[in-house]
Length: 431
Image (cartoon, rainbow, N blue to C red; front, side, top):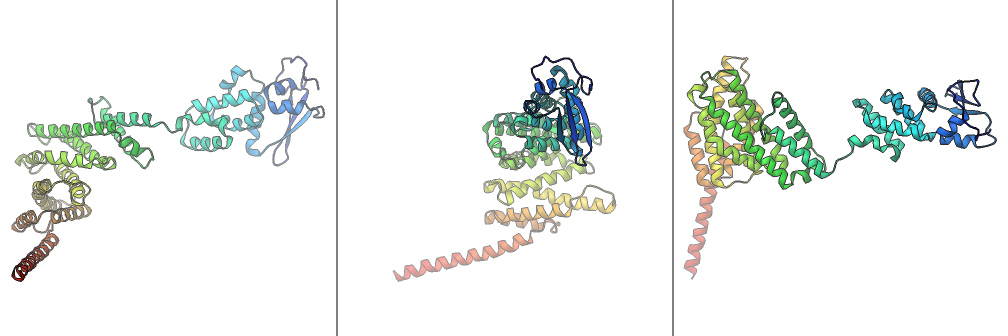
């Protein structure tokens, strides 16, 4: 076969000008003949160039393929006849490009391979397609790796930049972005939580000083917004207005979100201190007579956030000086003691009343308070336990366990003191 002859214009399947027949045979042995041209095959495919350069190759080449790849083989043969600048436009789906690509690599069709890679790298993928693409590309090796550019790991500086931007958006640093500010903020918060998952780069990002500084600024921002909204609430003519209540609750939810993510960054102490600083002001407003029968959802949410603070301090995850721990207890214990029976009474009156302290919340708060009390100096324990026994609400939180331990410790301490004095006296006499 003369491969040096000047190529004439020809089309795929043109029997009159064909000098090579390609026979596709599938797994069932069903053959199909395709009339082709050596000038096209040699110029477009390294595989066919090698086969046709062999003097004994003949004018018929048999290609084995499976049923699943049969159509892709035919598509590849058709693509061989297209001009290079038309190849990219001829690809019309992820599935077709993904089917042709491994064949183009196997038959060493450089132009078709490059176009398939370019197409797959640029077009959108469905979730199922992405899984399939990743699987196929990993089989094909380095030549196809550019396709996966969109899902390659980014460097640490890029991750840090995205994380900082998400935190700024999630905490409204710089102001909200109407008209979709709340929706975008919620989305940013979800992404920050996702980025704080178990990725190996997470500790490197969260330990960065700039990241911590931005997160602390975000904490300050959300706490300030909550305080301001709450402070202005009593000035609203109609305190039952849903708009005002919704704004306050949203601000508190942002505060709770910070409470949830800061432990993952070893910044829970900052939240505890911020919560402690604004606790008195919060309670002054929430306990105003105007709100005696309003804002139940806010009151329950305050208890939930405070419960997380009490757990962090009570179980030693956040270390505070004893006076700060005492202040935290004396600030919130009376309110918890007061609000629990009120919520229970409302639930008894109305079985559909949705705002309750569920059993898990009650137990976690009670356990944290007991642990917190038992870690205080003895005199502070005595003050808190004495105040507890003077109230009518002994059932919740139940500090009887703390009282029993305090009594035991007091007796033991007195006994140790007497034994110490006896030893000192005996030593004096022996001298």
